[in-house]
Length: 99
Image: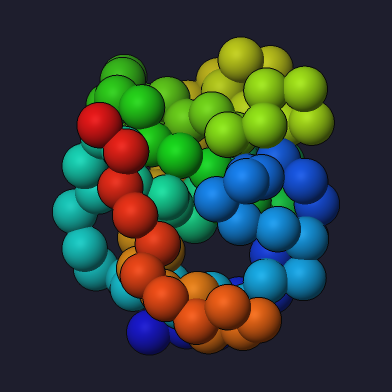
């Protein structure tokens, strides 16, 4: 498990800038999960997005906030590093899958 600070508005309203979440590594993602990803085009950047579907080269992922997200629409497939299961702060609770 890894704690992670969410930065930016791309996952609003599910997650907000400043939320602290728990990422579970080694879990197979499913469509609708909130996931931690890395982009081939930006290997130094980690992002939290929603898994849409597996595609050649990884997963197609999108931000919940379509007006404030850089995601697979711009960067292509992403490598999923883990699945976000819990928000620790400021409103503890389970991060729900959509679908």
